[in-house]
Image 1 (tube, rainbow, N blue to C red):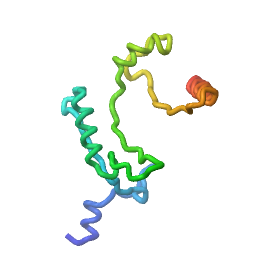
Image 2: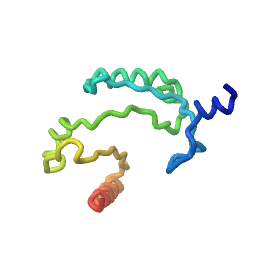
Image 3: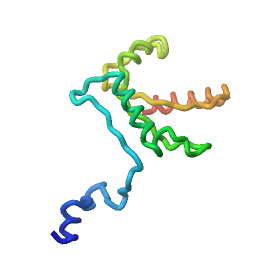
Length: 128
């Protein structure tokens, strides 16, 4: 098989729709841990942390003193936990799983700036 045929057969797909192979790039480290039947467990989280810390650049090496590289683990929304605290924290019950979204926001430590940010977030969420 010549190199053009090899590239056509095994290379990147051709541009189509919103996909453009010009924007492809390598990742410096990726790991994946899951239960093959979709079962959730704390062990999966522990295993994912082990993978993360063993990916030298993406994990726990701390090569830069003033920035992070965004490395972390992605987990499912802990519905049972959130449903348990929502009445006290939000003053309401949560919808069923899949009917709401969550997010993590890092807020300023200054109380007035924090309150301003929380108000802006609440306004934007209500608009959406």
